[in-house]
Image 1 (tube, rainbow, N blue to C red):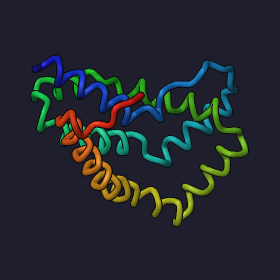
Image 2: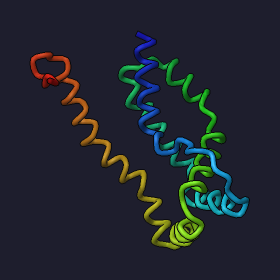
Image 3: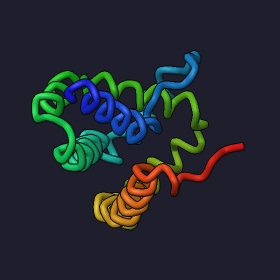
Length: 149
């Protein structure tokens, strides 16, 4: 049971944080990395990561043992993940895009949008979770699962 819970926890974390996976290594300038770092500061990555992780662990508490959740919480290197986010942003976004993101998220409107992101994500999670529950209920009934052919 613990192995299944651990695999489920890892799968959920992978899906939730897939967007922050590092891209292909490229050489980027120190100036561009500094700009990406400023962007990551503005979007308050650390708080966003904590909020997302807390949402995931609340969902896992129904099926995963507390020790699995504690293991994940204690084992994740948030500083390393943050650095990967900075490097990935610097690799993917152009300098002009990063400058625009930094300029926008530094404005009152940009800050307001960022402040609403947890509420936005939480509101979206409800219908998504319901759809997953509905699908899993059908999955448990083999006759309801469409056959691939």
